[in-house]
Each structure stands twice: as structure tokens, then as C-alpha cells.
Image (tube, rainbow, N blue to C red; front, side, top):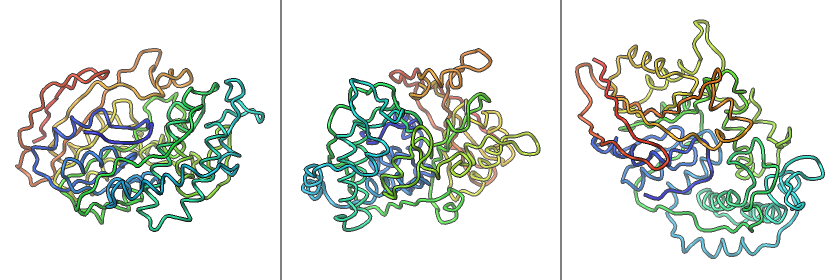
Length: 396
């Protein structure tokens, strides 16, 4: 099953087959993707025949959601529009001023002493195309398709490791290529998919589905990890600006939007604070999330290196008297784990290597005495990700 997206630290593309196998026996028809990110999970759910409700606080995720879930026009409609946009002459504008750089013989460090995200020949196209989209898009969904195409095109020619907190010192080979917009992988059907943009707790009351899938930001359990390094608003601040085209004030060496600072843009699920009992506040947020979900089933995806520990989540489920099956996977770390400046934070704790495991908690919100249906998933050998191991824990 093919999905489409950008380089993304929280992507679940690799475990999509396992997730779909997990929920298939449940007989659900409607699914809420509460932290939809690049919408790969939502795209897969739509292709599998489910009616999808997708939500994320990020504007670019909302754009992706409208493109992949709500667009009803075929690729042939967009081809001449994209051909026109691709032929626009470039111009130096806001994006070139803040994120464009000269080739410099291979060095991405420019005259202002800052590393740049793209070379000028691509930021000039971005400046021209982004302004033109505002002029020609006939409605929000059409605009979202065009913006999705633009973001994916720019993601293919960037000079980063997959986020916007820091850029490469030397130009990535792909940065020399010329960006070209293409029609996204449009998924067209007649089901009433819904897309929301808001804080999960503001959206919950208006969503009633058969199953809710939650993949919240994990933060980090490692006290050495600076909070700013695990904030998705900071990771992908340029995509926010591409969507809004609001040309904000920027700060720091990466020219981050001022409104994605750690204080302003932090999610409670990434919060490093503890409550009066000494527990991370994220644990209370997970409890609130599960308790207030209007769905028969919940699948919670979480990582063993997140702010909330495995044992803490188990304790929450026991206190809520939820019945649950838990599936554990050895999982390849995301791209940041291979970087020199994050290696010690993400791969080691107290000088020891940290295992990286992904958990899928299948939770049943039903009357007392009812049990989860028997779910069997064979051990799956996943390329570069080790194996999928099932742990069955039923709370009575």
C-alpha cells in the first residue's frame, strides 16, 4: 500500500501493515487519526476502505489532510495548473532572503554565517510559486493539493537531515537539483472523510468513531535531551510558513518562526515538566485522552524512550480499568539518532546504549466483563526493523 509524504521524524510508514492487520478483525468502519502528521496513516486507512477523521494542530498537516482525504478532482485537472506553476520565472522574495544560499563550492554556510536549507535557484521558484498559488486556487481543497505538491517538491531538494532545526554544513547532493511540482497521489472516493486542525482536547468532543488511533509526540525520557530538540512545531516550522505565507519574524541560526519557540509552541505531550507527585504531566494527558475518547477501540502508538514510560501507561490503563492487548516491536530509530549532536541524547543514557521499541496498545472501551476479540498476528520480519513480537496482556 503506497502512501506519500515528507521526511518526518515521527513517520509510521514502516509499521502501517502491522497496524492495518491489527485493526482488521475488529470490524470497524470509522477511524479517527488524532495526531495525523504527514497523514500517511490516514492515507492508508482511506485506501483500506475506512472513513477517516484526521486531526493535527499543524497547518501543513491540515493541508495534507485536505489533499489526500477530501479532494475529489482527478490528476488530469491539476496537470495544466502545475505545468503553469513549474514554468514561472523565479524571483527573490521572503523565502530566498531567509533560506536560500549560493552553491559556494559545496559549502552551505553563506555570507551571513548561517547554513541554508535550499540553494537560491529553488527558493526563487518557491517565492514565485507560493505567491501565485494564492492568486489562482479556487477553494481551500484545491489550494491544499497545490501546497502539498509544492512542499513535497521542496522536500526533495533540501539540504537537511529531515527537519528544520539545523541544516547541513555542506550542500546535500539533492540540493543541486531543480524542484519540480508533480500531482500528489490523489485518493478519490465518495466517503465523508473529515479533516480538523486543533488541539486534540478541543476536537475530541465533536468526534465519534469506531476506533481512534493516537500517535502523540513522545518527547524524550532522557534528561540530557534539550526540550527544543523534540518539538514538532520547531522541526517543521518552514512548512507552516509555506502554508500560511505570512512571512513571519524569524529568530536563531535556523531562522525559526518566532511563534514556534519552546514556550509558545510546546505540546503537553512533549512537556518535560512534572506534577506535584513527581510524574511527567504527559501521563495525565494520556489518561485524559483515553478517558474522553468517543470510540469503542483505541490504538495508542508509543515509544519506550518517550516522556511516559511503558509502566506508567500500563498503570493508567489499570486505573481506568481498560482491557488491552499490547504489541511490541524493535524499531529503527529516526534519522536524528544518527547525527553527531543528538547521538548522546537519543542513543545513550548513563553511557549505555538505549533500546528502541515501539508499542501498539490496543485498548477496548466497553462494558465490564467484555473482552477483546482474539487477534492473531504472525511474527513479521520487517526490513531494517527486526521483528514484530506480540505480548498479550488482558486486564480483567
